[in-house]
Image (cartoon, rainbow over all chains, first blue to last red; front, side, top):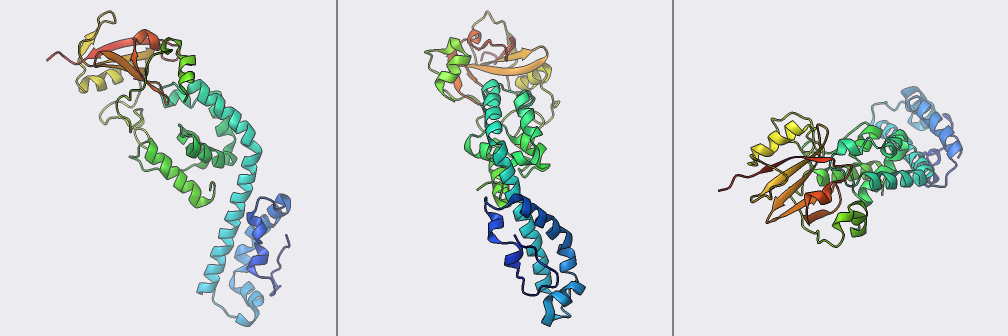
Length: 186
Length: 131
């Protein structure tokens, strides 16, 4: 993926964030490199000074103008989208281990009536230990075979989109809606 | 969960009909309350048998029964390991029934059928008073 240059007026946003960035086949190493640089320079590129040189004929564009705000917004949005893609690729590497652990956990704890006992099973704790990369897999599990994945989701995402007064079914719906909105699952 | 899975873990249930649902089908009763779990307000947020017994008594199950006596009214058996509640079974319409964790609901079982390591022992049986 080509880098883009601050003074290169011919480079369009599509080149900075090519469509392949959103596919599963992009070069992770190169993309990661570009992501880091994109994050570093997003503010510089969209500052008033750099807009003067970058935007050429539109020199003098105010940083407060809609176009600039929109540019910054989309740049950050695309960086976030690429990060999700990278995270989902990381999840694929863990899928086999996750499935083995989740099967063992379900088999060993399915008859327990107390969640606080279910979630201290070593397999469940190992899944939590996978960190952020486990989020897509946890959401898939919640979608395809509902179970008590809420504790692991809270631990790995550091958030809880479910309403306080929700029952398990409503909490599941809220988590899946949250996951789809951020691109963690389809 | 397949019926065969239940029978593997609870051999005493083989060939018994266990399709009846039991209790509150919408909420998972366990503290703390909120975000997919429910615990009645006004009670300690713990799973000790004392707290669980208080909750059950508030719902009208006030008469303690011995395990040796067959209940005549709707009853609840509290299973526990040590001081910690692990499981419930409910007696109604002349038979015991239970919800096995996230899996099957079972009915027409005896309390002996449910004696497995993960549930421990019957701590107490509480019945509704006779009318």
